[in-house]
Length: 454
Image (tube, rainbow, N blue to C red; front, side):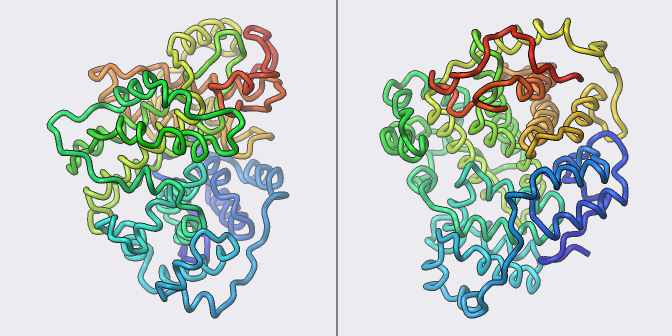
């Protein structure tokens, strides 16, 4: 059984979004063993869920283990005293206390179970009570959403050890997002604006558009939230999500669609397609709201689910703003799709569904992700997030006229897989796509190099 200190995957623990193919006992055994030694969790769990073989899992581990460090021991006196509020607060934001926080949360989970521990330490309301849950709530969204994603991986794959890591990650990250996330609730209007309306507001504000500078060390904290915090809070002043299941489900789909829109269509018409590395994290994290929203209310209330989504939307649009509000164009995505259609290998459509219910045309992409030798997990997470988005958004996207619809998701996923193979001085991604400097060294469109065969 998986515990707060033991990773144990099975063919059934596939993260809530299994892919085509047979996930074997051997793959589950291998990924469990690898994660027990070094926690390259995001990559290994993602390709495991996409059907990676034992050899592919080992190869991914070997390719990325160089920057992983074994888990050292934590100092027992600090662990024991973290239950004291003054000590807890004095250790927040300090990376040197990560392993003490980890041991503390492992102990909490062992004593109470992960569900009760998470409900108590993170998902406790009211959020603005000044307590520990407030401290972790804000920090979940720090560092390109990595604590939030780690928590999503832990819960969706039913691994208490990864959940403990996520809580320790959150505790040792900064709380720079507090002014954006802990604001008075918006008035409960009958027709709150859509996220696409709020995005449009951001694009039309000169102050917001110009808030981030290329020379900013951190373009979100030092740029957008320093020079335009008031304006960003203003564009969200009437945004709220009603705390009922139907509204939350639709809001999660809209958040997913929004992230797909600005991540997958911030393309340059004169350059080979490259996805922004920072936007990618906002998009890759959308899949975990399937997990969060599926939790029973005694763990995560409807009110808290709505607040998680509202905060995610603020950070997402803040991230978009921090890369200089680039133009977005579904037409450019569709133009690229048409250009590449004739040169792709095996371009005939694949009909039907997989044993897990996904469109069979996603299968080649899943298989390509599991066999990549240079990916550190970001590509695989993006393809999995796109396949999930196609399902989550489908019930709403036509009626709501969201920008990405239907086959756009599959074609965008193909573009992502192909784009990382285009040789460029920037590497597989661009960083801060709205700035001209970010595209220096990216080849012109139509060069034909680096094709990923699907």
